[in-house]
Amino acid sequence: MSDDLTLTGITEPKTRKRATPPPLHWADLDSERRAEAVAEIGMPRFRADQISRHYFARDSADPESWTDLSKTQAERVRGELMPPLLSEVAVVDCDDGATAKQVWRLHDGAVVESVLMGYSDRVTACISSQAGCGIGCPFCATGQQGLTRNLSTGEIVEQVRLARAAASEGRVGKPRRLSNIVFMGMGEPLANFARVAQALHRIIDPAPAGFGMSARSVTMSTVGMVPSMLKLADLGLPVTLAVSLHAPDDELRDTLVPINHRWPVTEVLAAADRYAETTGRRYSIEYALIRNINDQDWRADALGVLLQNRLVHVNLIPLNPTPGSKWTASDPKDEAEFLARLRAAGISTTVRDTRGREIDGACGQLAAAQI
Ligand code: SAH
Ligand code: SF4
Image (cartoon, rainbow, N blue to C red; front, side, top):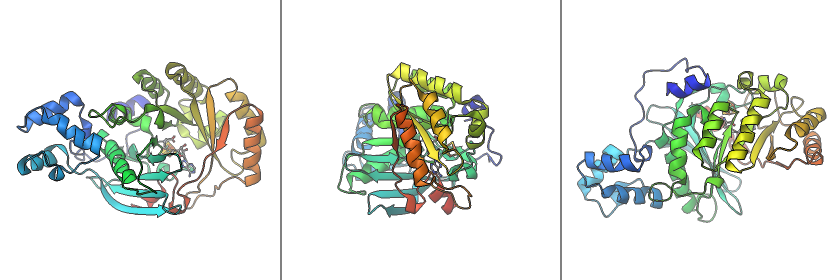
């Protein structure tokens, strides 16, 4: 755990207790270790494939309901290999049932959230990679909580499995397969690199090793942790990279995304360009429009110049104000002007829809309300 934190220069959470780690889970293990784990609980190794099929191909983590295990075997699998990691604390629906936000309590009482969003052409799950976040962006509810801890691979993958099960049960519209995953819930995924990388394998590897989802439909959102962005490129999984930029100039970005002091705008964009070269994929620039803070015409022009000749798409996100914050979303006129200026500069740009607003939709807000 500390390896990632030291590497990225993020300080250890001040209140870190010597807590017990989350129990080991099937989703923590790669294929080889699964066969060993099955043997360790006295079952033949071929059972590993069977268990994986239930978990990754049928989205089931309920050994008692599987007909190919005896009662004793099911109990052993449940106890040793598939303990429940996430218990639901709250679920809130909005957008006429097309959005569902779930808050989960983890084994040690930490709280995280995931959001499921049904659209006409896809179903997207927004998942968390950490409980809290240590980066401290002042406009973000999660940032205001600080970092509690990194999630384990199993805790990340369980959010995906539960989202898949919920989508196919018609939780956000008619029953459909989960098609997209965005790492835009709580936490900075690249500050928890090793576990997130393992989770990516579980998401993308073909069944029964993983869920077999398309890498392109997975989006990794980062504040721009340069070394981890390069490591992500080296994984060779063509996931979509989203860079939370929020300002074209270091002076303002230093205040909106404090880690900019360590990796400034030009270094972050150079790493994103490397990512684009290695994977052949266009990356996204996330830009939360904050009234009178980063939405001036000249900043739109500066952003246009900065992104010239880069393989990017810009997502403008109307700020979802956090409770007690003096900041709010841009005036619609200013938002329209910002969009027009970027487009006039030849930059592909859209305004992100704001799903889940009425349920504290922005990153970390609903979980914050449960703590
Ligand atoms: N830590 C990562 C991923 C989680 S945040 C990151 O920052 O990229 C996902 C996205 O939500 C980021 O682009 C972040 O800037 C944005 N975000 C956070 N708080 C927000 C708010 N109050 N309104 C709008 N967007 C917000
Ligand atoms: Fe952390 Fe992302 Fe929120 Fe910044 S915006 S505090 S990096 S979760």
